[in-house]
Image (cartoon, rainbow, N blue to C red):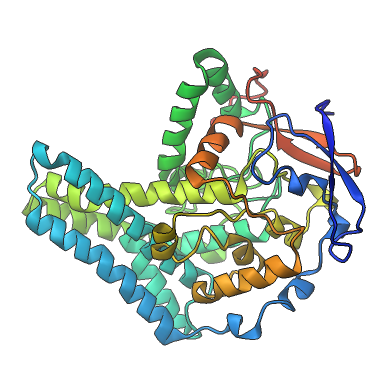
Length: 417
């Protein structure tokens, strides 16, 4: 059991909780801008999903195909428009490298918004026309080198068990001493916070491909996974047999896009494809890793197991953050309305802000919004959230919280992921 200091906080809303002073156990990794808010809550403090849905305006559940298509056109036009302008007017010379880097950052940020449209299709929030919805999602994600149906399946599992220590999927923390977490502690202990933080930033920014290929950061319940080929050494319950054809078709579509990019490179040059497509694609991948990490990770947000976990409690342990306004706009508010998204992922993004405000108003003691600037929060997370340990908080709840990042660990196994 953790021997960290104890402090008290008062939760004044008697309807949401019990009006009593709550004692919370400070995590070994410290506090975020949430100030330990989630640590003093019990399972009994949370409403049912039906009670949460009752406070969301009914029209927020309505999907408009024309409106969704308009947002698709919006993201597509900006993405391809910037790509066309860069290809036509920016020389591929070393002198213009800063311009190409700026282009990659800007269009990669837009590309993540484009990817989010496909993400909405995968959740059934784009249209009531399922054929159109899957066609759009398949095209958008294939262009982004994301296998659409494979991701749709694994992401549904992620939603169904979010913040579950053993059955969760993607961004599931490691126990201190377990596999990759042990090596990261050794890096921090021997090389210092800066080196470890920079390496962790690199891993988060590039880890999307490792997740698709090998299931990196996936949950222990599913083992080695591959979003392109669900057979052989990659056979797993994450992709049941009935999903195999869709997984393979999704992988084939991505291979087709890679082949088209190779043909483009043959007709022009590798440098052209790398600059116009590759740069924004890499930044899009970085956004994917960073935003998802920050949704589900911070020093004082616990993970749960067994009877302590349920769907709505896991959803409320998701964190909304204050993304920069233009970024939040072009990325369709995915980072600032993610609690709502985990409560009901079928709410379209253009209703998400209104639905979020309704949830925030009805459940202020449960809703998590960390006001820390995103870049500050990211550095805190990558340098302090290395591995977790199980503690008992003063309410008697057993939770997994992030361990002291400065301590070395004893290796328990040789797992890399």
